[in-house]
Image (cartoon, rainbow, N blue to C red; front, side):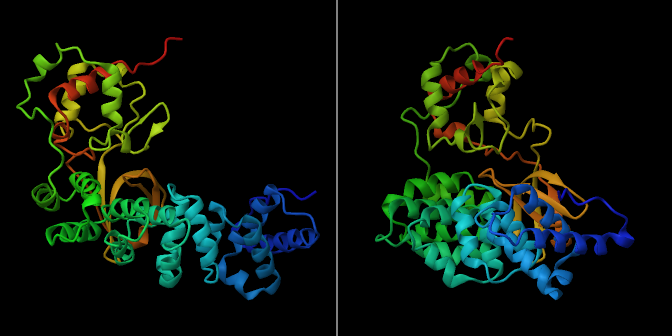
Amino acid sequence: MIGRLPRCLPAVCRFTACCFALSILSAARGTEPLSPERIDTIIEALSRLGPEKVEANPKLKEALANVLEATRGTPQFVELVREFKIKDQDAALVEVAVRNSNSGAGADAARLLLENKAYDLIKSALNGTNATKFAEALGNTADRQAVPLLEPIVGDSGRDAALRRQAVRSLALTQEGATALLKLATESRLPDDLKLTAATELHNVRWAELKAQAEQVLPPPQSRNAESLPPVSELVKRTGDANRGAAVFRRDTVGCVRCHQINGEGVDFGPNLSEIGTKLGKDAIYESILDPSAGISFGYEAWQIELQNGDEVFGLIASETADEVAVKIQTGVVNRYKKSDVVKREKQKLSIMPAGLQQTMSTQDLVDLVEYLSLLKKAVQ
């Protein structure tokens, strides 16, 4: 029985990996599909050898092809395409992007398509039956190359409404895309049915100048009773309606659910709020909403990273190794970048949570929201 590839000394590692990969290939030439364990073992052996060794050996190339076929459509497939710099799998990458549109695997697949300049295939995917999901994956790359591919969709009234709204959301994830949306609005070329979506997205961008301009051109919906808020010391004395507060939390124009999770619902970006009432009193919850940058939770510090190709990445550092940094962006997707591609990284002083959230709610909405959050407590054992 063939087991996992044993760890070995650098001096013999490549020879052992090569022999092991070839033995695995011989055992895998039958009609039986490769098991997950066998796939993992072949991948480990091929990875030990590296792209150049595999490319130079026809039998190893065959082993790689077999594993690609066995993993098609999975995140593992994307890893293989990226690691071995495979250029003839663009159609399969589209499949992964669609299947994993709201995850890092989908963003990785879409990013590889952009790197390969597979623009015709990308345009075809944006015209296909899964165009909305592909547009989501494309936005999650936070790559400015996606802007000219997504922008034409916004103004095309013949396209599906859900796709056009997703194009707006995806564009707002990059500075270039947000600028394009603002220009459409300024020039009165932004369709009326997308103005609310654009206003909501641009209200939450991190670029202060763009946000200020958007508030003039596309002001967010105002509450019926816009008024000056009383001090927190008075707000904490008020009792709200938790059921209404739950609805406020999920309201698109407020947007809490797009950055926070409660009991598995919502986007995993900001702190999980499932037990926020156990951790914070009402006064602290009010303060975190009204002045989010005053007390940023550890691990939720925002970072801006500049890449060699000119792109900027903004989000939370999800993990880091000696060679790679993983960044979680606002949609909850984790994108990974080689440190050799990073020109500059800088921790931001402002919270990832946008200021001015209270402007999207009435005073009573705010009271109801805090009432709801204050009741989210850890279950008693």
